[in-house]
Image (cartoon, rainbow, N blue to C red; front, side, top):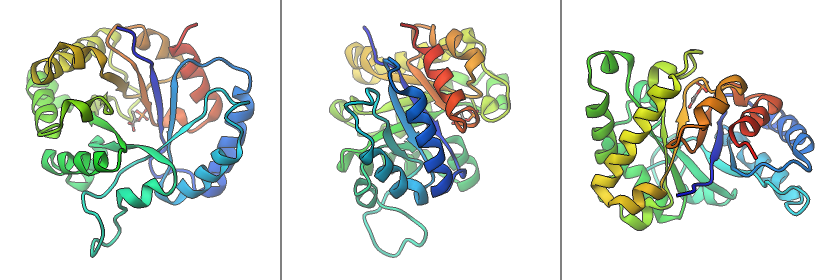
Length: 262
Ligand code: PEP
């Protein structure tokens, strides 16, 4: 089963509109004429989405074979109303947002998002055809306590509760061990492959072997140009969700190039 790799830059709370412009101009000029056989996604802060949408709309996707797709870093599980500080899926669609990162460990740990909230957000995203990048992953304590599989199974089962097979086909899973995010410590390719194979087996239990074979599972956690090739060579790893190393255009490009050998 061949799955197109997907590389997504999660800028977190970095890059306002002017830094977004600098990045995109540089990224587009450096990738002109390159063959990068992967989906490329950028998730800026909400405030930079209009600038990103305008810049990408102005760039000619015919000249630029690998048009970038836009992701949001979060969305509300509600449609509209008295939810101070929140952003709805309909608002995101106005800025050509195609993906939304949901369940990131920072949202879970710092902002108290539960599996039930993440499930509600996934459902809301699918109502407007937004494609969730659904993040799961264990803490170091959970891994060391032998709870890796239990944690991942619960996050997947609860996060995807009542999600149809059709909607699953537009979901990307990001396996991100919490201990590897922003720490410089990467899971070994063996640890990552084992976890990815387990995630795929849980999807097979829930939806059957065909959807499990089709779903794309990204690895996330201190991916860099130097470790991208080894990680992406694993049979169940289909791209990466990248934080720190995707803040510089050249570094993001090197990860994509190294992770998608032609
Ligand atoms: C992330 O934020 O999803 C992430 C993987 O960050 P980093 O690449 O910096 O570890």
